[in-house]
Amino acid sequence: MQKWFGSSGVCVNEKGQLLMVLQGKPEEEKTWSIPSGGKELDETFEECCIREIREETGYTTEIEEKIKVKRMTHEHLNLHVEAHYFLVKIVGGEINFQDPDKLIYDISWKTLDEIKDLELTFPEDRGFLITYITNEIQSKSLFD
Image (cartoon, rainbow, N blue to C red; front, side, top):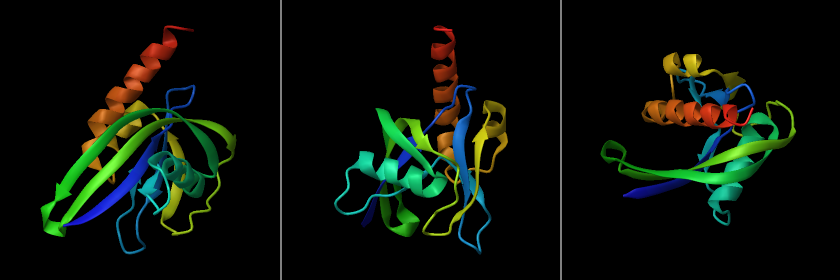
């Protein structure tokens, strides 16, 4: 069985919106995802997350905390996936299409209501993302 390792960045702005990218190969239907991608050989999962966000969105970020690790096996593809999810904050840059793989078609901040109806690249993440953003909004509103 082949193994794929990667990272994903969860970035929530002060309005409670989630940073997402519209992605897909030219021949595929385009779907929404949080910035993510495969880990390069000499990278840590944290470095992978920061690089993927920069490549896909133009933003420079810092890791705030590790959120979770998703492990899945796709028997039909003979593939085991391990994706590390991190909460990140933007520390620089601006929205900029600079994806070297040319798979990104849009970059947008999505509200909770929008996330409920979006066509997601990884539909299994919808519940986790909605719960996580809701908790982030609630925890931040306690301090306002």
